Amino acid sequence: MQYDSPHSYSRFSKIIHWLSALVILTLFGAGLWMVELSYYDAGYQLIPHYHKSVGIMLAGLIIIRVAWRIRNTKPLALTSHSTLEKTLSGIAQILLYFLIFSVVIAGYLISTEDGRGIDVFNWFTIPSLGKLFNNQADIAGNLHRWLAYTLIALASLHGIAALKHHFYDKDETLKRML
Image 1 (tube, rainbow, N blue to C red):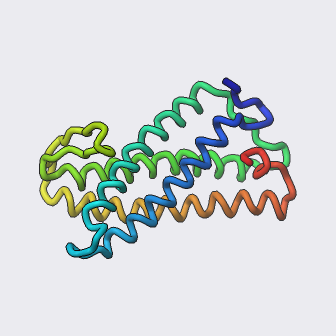
Image 2 (cartoon, helix red, strand yellow):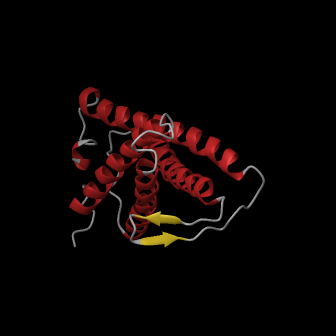
């Protein structure tokens, strides 16, 4: 398997990055759609099932991604990047991972308050820890929603920063991830 080098990301890193982005945006869109469904809508049972299943798979993907990042050499920041840009980039990356895990954990707490596990694509079930605190589903639901909005906002800033590097700074930042 090809590893990241000091100057570029490997094919695996690029695939896992863009797959994560696609899954997160899809889950966000599905989440917005889900909360508008009524009991009589055709997708009332199906959409939440897939939302939860894909969310659990995202957690696995992010665990793989973090393990890959720990095991791998991350490409060096470009010399044209300021100290502030390097610092903000590092903080943003940590926050993105934190937000992804937090959204997934909050989603788990919503779904398992009643003691039922999460059925993942009818392949396996993630067991429930049950009700861990009063109003668990409501509190976790609010956290899930606001953390998801925050995640999308930060991911948008991440994308805008990449476009700034590409079109304004005219450096290789974006090209290294394409």
